[in-house]
Image 1 (spheres, rainbow, N blue to C red):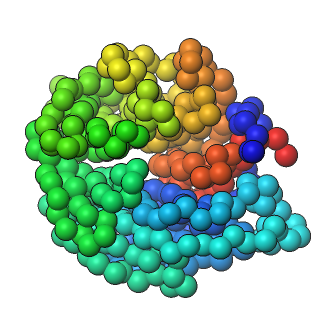
Image 2: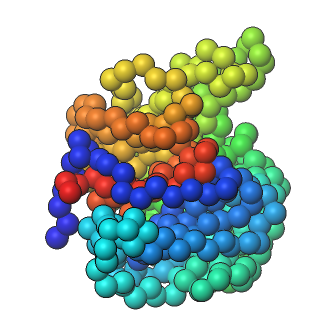
Length: 356
């Protein structure tokens, strides 16, 4: 049994670099690989036990959305990150077998690509012209059968993970759709847009159930006549009782993107939200949020980056960690005791949340 996380012990384990700024990152189901998407249209696969880097070439524009379809294979223990070969610190525990898995990625041109993520050099297996404009996010259903995408064409679409067939289109957003999440019960699904509207859909019927209001994370700046905001990060807790969202709030200048990170947590049953407060004033945007092990964990940045921790039970602020540069994504390791970040400066770094 893995130890409970302690945000106060958060420390960097691995610090890796790419030649271009990064927009997103995710671990594969085994925890062996970290995938990071760059502004050079490449996807970087890092074997975290050896430091070996493999470039996945196939997109011709920026990639942010990454998701996986696989039966989880044995998870790399987080302890083995501490002194891997690339840090010159001796050996690691025996490497886990990595079962075959699919990675699915979406790009700025609206293309959705399937990859054999476990292959020595992954190549595109299937490309689907999924959206008109940027695919903002990609998500996979809990049973692995369905892929969801959303984008700048105001649409949300469902696809068969097995063969790429189009299954359904959700219409109703009147602006760019930034994010989505499947509820753990496999019957509900949420999508969130640039204007802070969250739509709650019934998957079996495809009908809209309700709307949740996260307009705290949106503003129309009358001075610059510009919209700013949107749900940049979104996730459910494992039990499906809470939904967390993040973005930017208190915007004073839409042209320069000046505002403060904003994090909301909704009670799923009632639909009521509460705002999680930062301890200190910080200018920037929240780009990723997760609910894990009794904590809400968010990350974002401006010039530099931050990771923030709150207690889920009472929304009490716990800790903040300064990150190297503007942090654009945060991914939890499937082992539960570490996370990775993707940053504007090309850092793909891994942090432990347990004592050494």
